[in-house]
Amino acid sequence: MVNKIYEDLKEIAGINNVFLDVSMKQHTTFRAGGNADYFVTAQSEQSLTELIKYLRAENLPYYILGNGSNVLFADEGYRGVVVKTGKFDDIRISGTVLKAGAGVVLARAAHAARKKSLTGMEFAAGIPGTVGGAVVMNAGAYGNEIRDIITGARAVDETGTVIFLSKEELRLGYRHSIVSERELVITEAVFELACGDGNEIEAKMRELARRRTEKQPLEYPSAGSTFKRPEGYFAGKLIEDSGMKGFSIGDAQVSEKHSGFVINRGNATAQEILTLIKKVQEAVYDKFGVMLEMEVKVVK
Image (cartoon, rainbow, N blue to C red; front, side, top):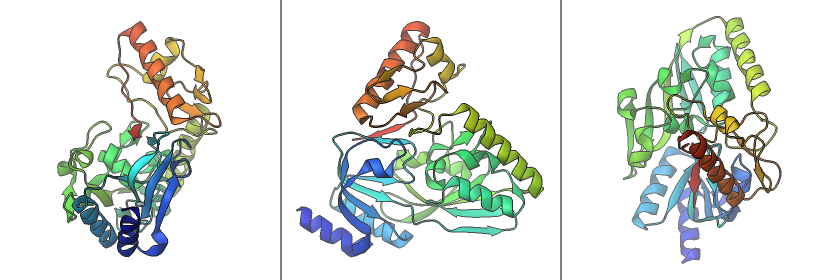
């Protein structure tokens, strides 16, 4: 059965784009987790549509992976197919409209906008994810979100059909969109920016980068902010005030620099990270009656 699936995937995606038993430590920013049975890089929208049709027809579990910046794979690994969309990396700019493939890293898109003196995307320059993942989660930072600048997105739906969703149809909310509900796969996003001054845009990006470097533990592997912002509170402050700042289990630690981040100090296992997260949730709930919700997606 394994050989048949492997051969089928190679026929659809190409012999050089399919791998067996791949460590997800190498493909996620947490640098933790087990191996995926199959790892496929989709090189085109057509290849992706064929892959999804095949996987659904064969009833094979699959997970769509961008930059791996907001995900944690279990130590036991993933008994299915991980499909990476990193090759969807084209950027096209016409006037104030920027179109970016799902695999484009946000920082690259933001700098492409800066070079054309387009403003509105500065906040995204430091978010460690791809355009596709940013749409799925309505990523945001420093008071801005993807929904502030997006006008729509191309996606492959659950039947393997390419569709276009407007901003309204995406139903973008706090770290939420319709994408995960419908099991859609974003292939490209369209952003409406504004004309600005190149020097001012660059200065703003540098200032945000400085603030991020000062306040966030960028020197360690992590998945970014571990928890969603609870209404009326800040997760990092709740965690710190609960006495959990610096708390660790194995190599998993609540960052001493920013308590909203769980970091991997070297060789943390996924289970150590998850156990630590649970301890943090319990400590915050016991002291403040607030249950922190994970922002990180756990795949197993």
